[in-house]
Length: 460
Image (tube, rainbow, N blue to C red; front, side):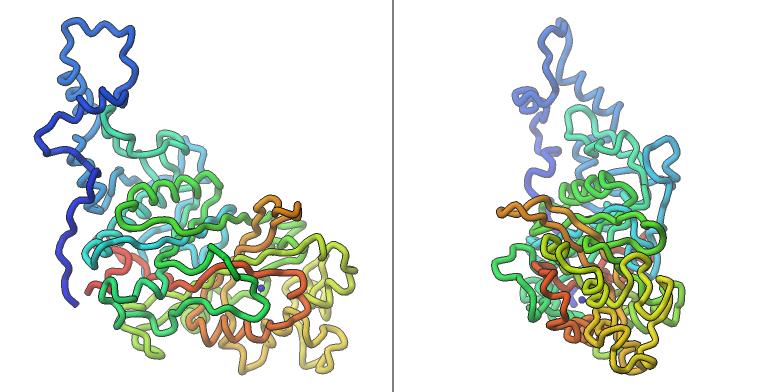
């Protein structure tokens, strides 16, 4: 339709009362945190000792567990185990966490999506580094799956258990991005900002006035084979990072099944995302998706990253449904039933614009012709689209609030996405779509191994 080695941070307040010299059970008992003891025979029982024994037997001590979470160790607050979701409700799919690139970029789209933007509240560079370490630990565990630690009855549970006692991998990927505002004066990172990273501009035909869903310091693209797996992951990460960042906005989406085959259909009834780069080609992804160190003015740490574009695009279906089929197909340049270009018969047929210079078959202002003219000059402007449909219910006027969470990845957001978006200004389709929010982010390079963490190059 983008250095000084910090010192270790202080433990955030209220994360753990262990080691203070006071007994944590007294306050917990007063607050009812240990459960309702009415009707229980406590004669001769030392409640404090019993609770201590039970906590020790069932899990790690409160203080040690708290430090495991905050310290961002390899396992975080849980024991990560390789899992095929055996005996759980997950799909059984598991994507390798470690590697030169993050998962969720060239990964085939899963069934469910949440894009969430955050404001980073870390007080200094040391706390920002700790945020990235904590994120790494949580994402490593959540995407691998396993059994959360038992912290004992006197502590809040390590996991929400919304997925049951064992966390399934369920095809989960979590892609971490950073916005241009993270490189302001707060953390001393201005010199390391990716070369093309800036706030997403307001394009002609956008409708973002008064929007509360714009930009952010940090983004999470969370995708999985089940909606509740996505929800669980966001809740877990928000819990473990609340000392360092706060949610700003989020958008949820879903992949529609193939009907009858091929690419999913958007809320206008047309197939969306047909002409993507070949993600199986190393040369194609190297030229169009991944950023490279010291190329085009990029800093050295960006190798293996990618610019992420998020656009929340409402589709005005009440008006669209009154448009004739011929006009709809001419606006897209494709058949609605098959997804084929108007000059072809199959979804994957390549439109031959050279044979139709006057636009008698595929109009010159058709969406597919403007977005991808298929010339030698525009070949390097192609982007990888990874969109999801959304349904937000009704607006205040009783109209359906449905549309597309447009997610795209590209090596250079100016050369690629902005060039495409500029060609689409005032296309006929703009009367039926309304971009209302989103932002540019830089998807960080992958976490290479167990000793690495998100954004480590920023602190090198």
